[in-house]
Image 1: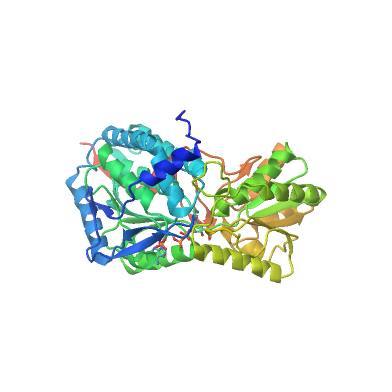
Image 2 (image 1 turned 60 degrees about the vertical axis):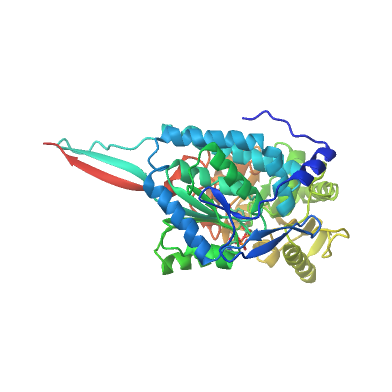
Length: 501
Ligand code: NAP
């Protein structure tokens, strides 16, 4: 674990941002490359709506080049046939380089999608460095199997890399969500082609360049930039891609399954949307902590979190106290320029997303639901800002309780007993995160077993580390990122049966 400290001087971040080199081209075969037709697309920062840079917009031919390069690298064995320890050492060097360039990466994240730089530094980059290092260390600690089957034979069950893995990722955690997948795919011996979100390509482009410096051979990690419907589709439908791993919306995840079915039936692994329940009982060990954490769970990253605690389920006996506390916490957040280290709450990622979130708030107001905090109007300042909103007495079947808004909009629902709490919590098409606050260990276990979700936090929220899997159920997707289980989707099982003579 790194003990590095963030520089908290505003002048430092202003100066660093002014001196940043913003990547404009794609990272293919170990070098920068423009799109074949020189196509570009403007990248607009949600910080103030200005154009940061024009970034390459890849078309089918560029995706073909990237996939062909990745396949070539795989077949030559420059990476796939290294020993696991050699691959692990490259990942560890990569993690070291990221650590050395941590402020630069944090500033790029903050510029491209508006995350407060303090969170980009303290959480996003820390998580990513930790994941790359963890898989690097795991490299030579994995075992194959030799089942004790028959005495006249030896059976070997080995795991082999698949070839070219395509990864398509969203903008809300542009680096860490890519690092949920990429180091696992690489350490298994695959080549990877990443398409980051159009809103946030800069940080992963820079990280790819650092990967080459760490020793990733050309072609082993490619980054193609461009729009989902063009670049993303070409990658997802590519017949030379062995496996597709995706994090993003449920709607796009559903489209990807079609592309895979219509091309080479590649497996598609999906980390999708959520509407996570956060359940507070009166016997929460520390009610103030539960209240503060509930406010954090809907405001961190401006609510743009797949696991956002967007449905707050409160026991009727503590409803007023909890609502009052959360409203106070949210109203006190320091809203500001994401590049100011003092900022706690930044803009939404784009003007379009801001308008979508505001439309959902207005829809909630029009439905007659009580608005305890916020408004359907943008904040009166440049940039894509929407202040936190809290709806109270939300009906479990209403749009406010069912639809993923992906912004700082909390729906508060009330329950009378454990059975009702679980029923409301599971009344969702999604099944990603969930939390329960109680001092009763039996209740915690009962509820954890009953929740139809991939993640359950007890007396905390959004905790975890590289050693535990992350993934959802139902319309939140399937399969696990992170942990040793995260390797499964990037390898194929092979049985070798040897008859003894
Ligand atoms: P999105 O619209 O689904 O985009 C995700 C990625 O897919 C982007 O790179 C996007 O490219 C690409 N894409 C869009 N259309 C495509 C197509 N037709 N073919 C191939 N690729 C395509 O999601 P988002 O708005 O960036 O992110 C928000 C969503 O992600 C929310 O629903 C959130 O819950 C979910 N999410 C889930 C997790 C999880 O782990 N379960 C984590 C974070 C976020 P463009 O950027 O060019 O559109």
